[in-house]
Image (cartoon, rainbow, N blue to C red):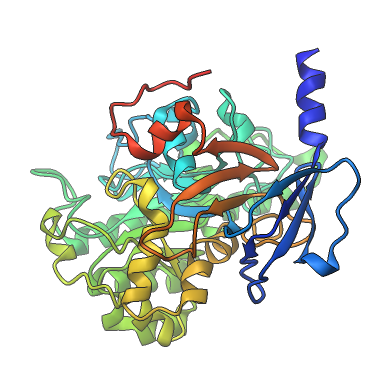
Length: 428
């Protein structure tokens, strides 16, 4: 009976009426109507152009603003220990195995308007492991949160040890973070060498799989299992996007060099000195995911962090996303990060895109989320005012047409206003 009630709730039609809609992929719509049915957006437009079905649940949002759900392209929420030290390069370690969907950090992110996140291993190793692309749905099973892009292009889909789908990228790191005290690597040149060596291993494994797939089935010999080798093959084939922790300009350029050598699909994470090499990044067509807020005293790479970095990169033609790196920056402040980027000169429409449609495209999920568009999943946020006003509050967050945060609920508002001491498990 409970299952039937859940299905009925998901099938309900919701009509959000009277708000200013910010679709992202088109101009804002004053006094708009957004229809949601079966968890997807059924219609978007001015009140005069959208018919509200009989029996729909009407939400009067006069004076409010509605934006797509925020997408955090760099997060460590989920309560797990995401820093592992099994080796210098650990491409087969997976963040999904450490995520607790009931952890309070998930609810704090929902309270900040985040509906999708790329949860990553830490940057203490040259290759920290696989990231997890997740939708912040209310569930106790992390598998039900995963956003998967289908079979990988590296290891053949019919290989006996093949994982059926790719549900994330891989975390790599440059700079001082992966330079452990007394261990290897001890320098940036050593770090690049070891990363290059691992990617070469992936290239060799990919070649071996290609030969295996081209061999007639009756003549195929079994290939020995190799978790790291297969994960590296996914990387060099482009099946897994490389999210490279790189603050300094020289580390950024090294990342671009590795991309050129191995053809990896690259995203520069942080890019604090990206403005110094903006033209080179633009020429490579590589996006940069920036956390505008950070602690400048945390590491020497952040000493030249500046608010106009996103604006300067955008002006040079670089695709920019905005991130939290939670817990470096609280997930509840992601929207405010957009306001700071606007203060630094980033146009408001680009700032909103940097929080929604741009990261969706980088993750390969923009056909389903990232903008208020008919047919997409109903991931949306109801705001008390304009998106980048310092006074604006997140009032509601919806994922797949289900409300996951309501500021009017006293049991939920504490996740928006409280500290890290809020209970670590969801409350009824």
